[in-house]
Length: 235
Image 1 (cartoon, rainbow, N blue to C red):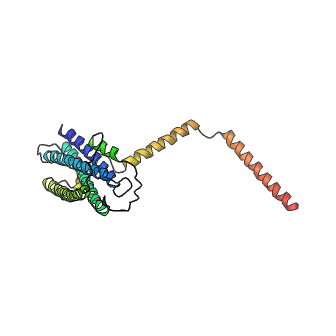
Image 2 (cartoon, rainbow, N blue to C red; image 1 turned 120 degrees about the horizontal axis):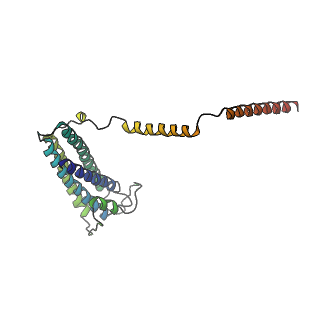
């Protein structure tokens, strides 16, 4: 039950982190607005809440000496995924701080970043936060206050990463994956080979009569070309 709960929390954390990454890329672009900044704030807070809950469960499970070898290996794989997710979240929070500082909301004639992302992004955040809509109240100093809050949260996430690594020592290079390296490539190559074999089975071996006809046609074509060249020289 604990393992399934950890997987569910980790899946939710992955979705929230991916959503936050998508929203960060729109800062300073044509879709930037106070609504976006509020969506960013709510999404990163949701991601941090999920990170705290996931880290607590994984820490308790990995410090349990009664765990079997197979269960411990599974929790270690989840821990590696969780650590990578936290690092990505911290990196995106730092990126959001840098972009938010460079592109304040109410600066006159602020330049725009050509991110290639346009339109409303509330749908993405709503899916991550499991809500239908996000409304905001107009506040001129919202982005400034949020940037100060973001600075503190970056420190908190960094401290969380450090504390978790001190509580649980899981070197990433010791964790074995379920599949061998390149398993996806091998499976796709096998599928391609199977498809080629099926085509070959449908077409069957080369027909000798067709091969003979092709050879005769090629010989006739070469003779015709040679005659054409001779006629051209005589004329």
